[in-house]
Amino acid sequence: MNSVIPFLPLMVGAFAAILLRGWARNIIMLVAPIAGALNLLGIEHGVFWGMEFMSYSLEPVKVDKLSLMFGYLFHLAALIAVIYALHVKDTVQHVAGLAYAGSAVGAVFAGDLLSLFVFWELLALTSVFLIWARRTDRAYAAGLRYLIIQVLSGVLLLAGLLIFAQVNNSLLFTHIGLAHDGLAEVGAWLIFAAFGIKCAFPFVHNWLTDSYPESTPSGTIFLASFTTKVAVYAFARGFPGEEILVWIGVTMACFPIFFAVIENDLRRVLAYSLINQIGFMIVGIGIGTAIALNGAVAHAFNDVIFKGLLMMTMGAVLHMTGKINGSELGGLYKSMPKTTILCIVGAASISAFPLFSGFVSKSMIMAAAVAEGYDVVWLLLLFAAAGVFHHAGIKIPFFAFFAHDSGIRTTEPPKNMLIAMTLAAIACVVIGSFPAQTVYALLPWEHNYQPYDVTHILTQLQLLFFSALAFVWLNQRNMYPPELPSTNLDADWFYRKLAPNIVRNIACKTYGAYEKLEMFAIISIKQMIQNSYDSELGKPKGYFAKLWPIETMVVWVAGLLAIYLMLYYMLDLL
Image 1 (cartoon, rainbow, N blue to C red):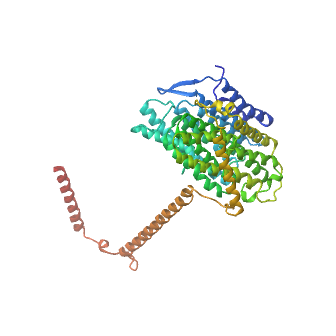
Image 2 (tube, rainbow, N blue to C red):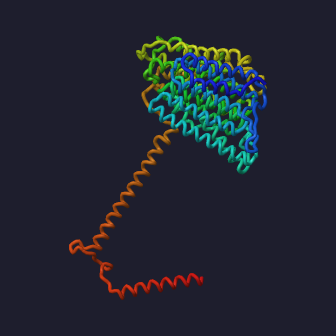
Image 3 (cartoon, rainbow, N blue to C red):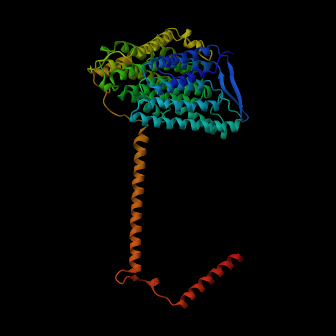
């Protein structure tokens, strides 16, 4: 076995990036993902590295088709992201980016839950620096919220794996499922919740839409590629065929559309779009058949590339203009024609146009839903597909590069950014045109799916045509939501508005009660002093201020002693 541990090349590259500068660092950053991908070509299936820990068998590195597919994907994504970031002179971003990619690779090759937990937390610790690297107050605040949620996910995973270790006497990461009894069921749900948080399930998704748009232009490319895809991998490994995932996935595919349509920040639009696409993957995992699971992981593979391409084009716009709100952009096709074309390629891919990558994976999930009798799910996914064409396929390129002329005149981004975007665009077209020789060749489960038949092509073209027609009609009638400077809240309303209001009300009432109690105590003490001291005579007054003869005090002492003795002997008798 001539291969090395899969995550080692990227981690070594991250360590080298700390020490090196200039062209030497750039070379190491380019070599690390290439060397890691080549290393996977010669790796054998099975347990690559096993060990014993506290009487438990651990498999820190285990190789199979599913882990290999994500391993190749993450190395490709790391290479494209590194090329895109070569112009950046920031050690923090370079080190964090490679270490983040290495953590993702380590997670998908982890054969036990304890090793998965270690890389799960490393994902959080390394990625947060890509948010903080923007060095703005908003980035620091968003990064802190991001880190809290990610650590919470890790705590839930740790609690779940400890329960599983206690009940099953094993930490191996195989099929987990939700069909358990007693304590094992609690452990399974804790692990499920941990995966769900990292997958941006509804109501726990705001860490994504909050933090990703606050990252640096190059940092967002890394962020969009790894965290959620590791969670998708974990669900495909641990919870395939759980029907609850079908309905969670449908919800994820549909609800972000409404927020994305009204959102002004174009990178936040893509963050909502990311949740939408993850919803398709979760539906496929929930259906659980071979074609559905293949569609889910194939769509994860394609999403990293075409979503990365769209994020890169918006990052290029932000880098060159300093603006990313749709209300402030427009007319950039005049000064950034190459970036415009590359953005349109990404838009066509995410919209699942035939001959583009999104079509060959999304259609697998749709076909699986129909085959398994999920007719309502299929209709909702059609709505979601039309919605993503609206907010990502049309809105992103239209408001950034066309729409009204904002008057901004700039140039194309640095060459390394153009090269990275071009590589991603080529991959979108090649995968979409030759799926059998590219992404389908990596699929873990057996299949004989053919995306290019008359039914699939006509259905998708009709959907795209009428969606485009609806956009044009709404825009002409001034009924399409305009790009306005605004801040939109969804589930984060609970902790941005409701929770602070509740805390503020409780604090106000508590403080008010404290003030009343304090005032009552002050008044009572003053009154007691007034009743016990005669300020005119300058001496105490009242019953206890009198001078008592000694014999009276002796009587009091004798009485108290008698009472004490009576109580003592009575308790002794009892």
